[in-house]
Length: 220
Image 1 (cartoon, rainbow, N blue to C red):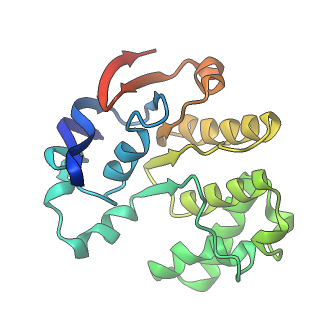
Image 2 (tube, rainbow, N blue to C red; image 1 turned 90 degrees about the vertical axis):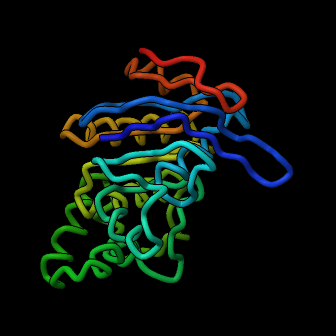
């Protein structure tokens, strides 16, 4: 599913966010990327999501080298995986349902099927009764659950989440974790960037530990 080979990411002024990072994540696996603030978690997330490209090395997803993809091919690649961002990137001028429908309209799914799948995704995260609400009317935890519904509505084989429980209370964070875990149990490969130890303690997943841009640990 994912193979990172000698990945280095260097920003202007010579700042190295990642240094010679390598690992493999198999189909259906749950892996957490963790480390101190500034360790390189979010940088690695952006590389896995093809938002940025590595300075050197390669990241392969299902045999495709992300660094070698043309810009026009990236949106088609992203249809195969779901993204949950720390800041959610919701559309506050649209309803909850319309936010989830957006990815389906982009791929041209027929309206009736799109409505069915969007409501099914909202039901899975416990937001079906709020489908007509605007995101601004939702709590922080509900907004994050909405972001997850939007990320999985295309039925991706890979789900990437960057600090999905950041700034949430413990009950909301626990619910987010349970939702993500349920998708993983259904066969979705799950990669989560987080510094929260409760996530590791809850399910003892595989943990990729970063320190100052280097991979210093890889295990349960």
